[in-house]
Image (cartoon, rainbow, N blue to C red; front, side):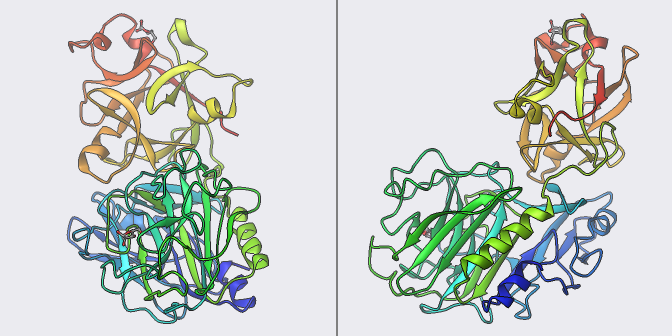
Length: 479
Ligand code: AHR
Ligand code: AHR
């Protein structure tokens, strides 16, 4: 059974089921989302490979070939048709845009699919819903998000919000929040935390934040975030690693006591994704799937949903390894005599080379593993997505190479695109910068740049240039 089959059988049917990656009912075979391309403004729906299966990402790739696409709508798979469209202006933020459709390539069920990667000023909403809890009715919700693409701005939310994009008071929202914004100081650690946005506060407990030491935050690349609220006198928060294991309850108890209006709740029944209730839209985040239920789900149903999510294998290997084909995972080894045990990896957001071997830590191995993607600016070239930071790519900036989240801009796409040619020293491959075609991916003093031998930067040195720009693609280090 898929998540909405599980919740339905438990007597708490889904009233919203949104995903860009997969069906959330075994019988669902409709569209998942709509994309619009820049070249001619045409739109198309992206559906499933099979009923109850995974997104037909190849249909998006061909529709968007040679141009760029935004996600303009995320369909509700539930019979309620609570579809999410791009959010309009609100009390705290102007008109939003849609997310770039190809910014968050991931694997699910062994298929290449796309998540939704939110930069600031991106959000979706439905202010005229059917079946969603209002005025103290019980409800539950979960979303699959990422612990590696977060910030401390308001408010990366999914769930129940106001129907007019304004802050209409305490208890008028009941939404999941995920990020590093600590509303009730101090919080435990640095987050990101799964929190409840109940309006005018991101709650980790009835008292707010730090009073709840159980909420230590969760940094996994794929995170299960869960909230349920009986609308009267109880809410609960759970988090988990969406790739393995079970859920942890970080809070289960009374509604907030930080002000009046939360007990009973006053939900209005709109659905928001990516912003706060008043369209506060400074937050960033990732979204793969999420549902909302009518009624308070049982813990047994929550556990069964988590088991189903884990079975999807989000972010797992695609099966192809070691090659420069899109979807393959690989490591890139340096070939200069100094450094033949060194691999291209990210460290503190920068690209460097450092030794990696079978005895290295999982972090070092994951930092040195890249997923080959079709070039973000030119499909005949390649881009490198980080294995442990989904949606982050290698890109150059001021000629220095770093790991950053794809923001959909033409500049990012160009900076993150590299065109493979035969290795300049006769070994492996050299990677020509798409937008600085005289420059190649090069290590210099253990940092990584794009460089040529006619430039004036230290890393444009002619010494060992051919060796420093030649990389051997090999088996990925990450487990
Ligand atoms: O509750 C936190 C935020 O406060 C809400 O999302 C927003 O509506 C208000 O600004
Ligand atoms: O990146 C390591 C070494 O640093 C390179 O081989 C050389 O160009 C520089 O001295």
